[in-house]
Image (cartoon, rainbow over all chains, first blue to last red; front, side):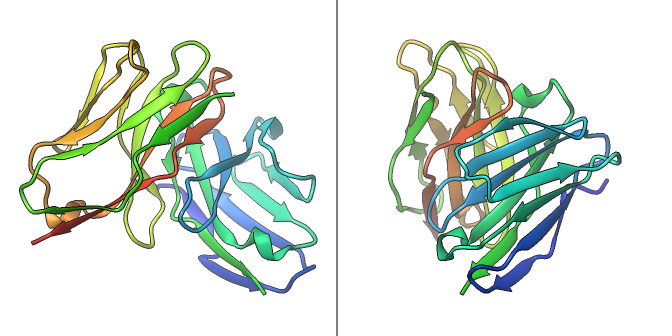
Length: 114
Length: 112
């Protein structure tokens, strides 16, 4: 049973560039959330997608955008990269309505902005 | 807004020692509470959960009890192993039901 799959594993980008990160949810899950984890800190909620719509958004600027596809996979896009965007980006999935039982996380994409 | 506060690390213990990692929360209502664990170079894994007051979550020898009176969810294990070395995150599901709010994490080192 495949868990949450994220790609790429690591990425190096230059300040000002744009990046796209990808996530395939666990089989049977239909809801995808994205989190940013800076070094030495807890994950911070970016947004959640369900039925191809952004359902809730955290305190992140509009440079962060996302998309969910009909097969429930998702992309996170970040425009005009800043040095401060360097972090581990985590994708988490669940079945709608079961968030109170916890989420399944992927291993993350390590983004370095230079 | 909702928040989670957990004890700062690192916590260093010898194998077979007793572990406690303190966690308190601030929230509207009675959120579901979680402990997640992150091993080096990996994502987060759900360790245990509790969905209502007085519930005890348990898994792999770890336990935590949802204490409404003290707004706490402390993690305990009676005898830690070297393989338990990791970062532990206390978290809650906010009242909207979509966003998980995490504490800053507590790094545990277990020495043989």
